[in-house]
Image 1 (cartoon, one colour):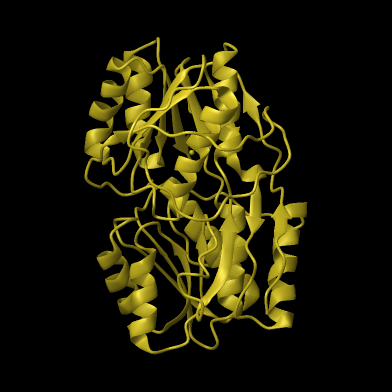
Image 2: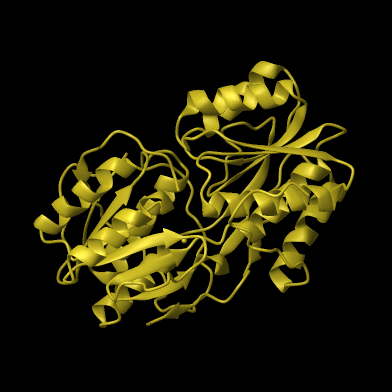
Length: 366
């Protein structure tokens, strides 16, 4: 049974003037255009994630006036996942903030500083590091060039001694992950409910802790397990890790991966078992209609357009809590009762009736 779209406002979006993915091969730089606009400002109505796929334009497209804004992405923009939604947000920056935009995809941690410096050499004044594993490079750029503003990501928000030309987007995954974990626990059907991600970093550690707690909330007796593959985008690693977990008894998954998601799907199909799974960022029903249950979507468009607007207005440092805009995808392959139970958990997270801790230091199996 399919549920309708449920909107969540997990926390008020905040910005104040005073948030990791795996590496890949370096890609080519392209420019984008923004086909649509969203409301400006830090606190504004929810923006829904667009679905589909995209590819880089072959030639630059410059808007009249505005700031030159570049983005480094850690994977391919046609992944229909993390990098796709980052790319879509950059299009919104171009459209709404009238910025000239460019991007570089498949940027590894080791390459990020070099790629960022190249954008600076080309006259870009704002560089977005779309991936919290690139935070160190964002900090380095901010410290090295006071004329450039960097936008980085971290799980906990504003940093101690944050540079005066650095914005931080707080990656608030954990409330939504709790609800996905609840669904996985509900659907484990006597087996293990499992969480799989790429790099073990604060945002994914927090996500794992929330998902495991959600699993136990759905079924206190359910066994839970987790793993980090070491790479968000390597489908082979995703398939191997998922296959190993299935052999160890995993019968449901929360999948916190990007380009590696198809590997997990392949492992599920290869097993010949009916293993439900949930994911992030976009509706992935088209990828695996038989097993995909749902997930949460959120869009970086409001965050990045708001931050760029603040920068253009002279506020070059601050933090932005991304947790304010999450929407539950339609739910698939569940009964009416399961649909209702999962939706109620999302509502409880939304209202604050269910408090989810942001535990970023280490995974604590409940």
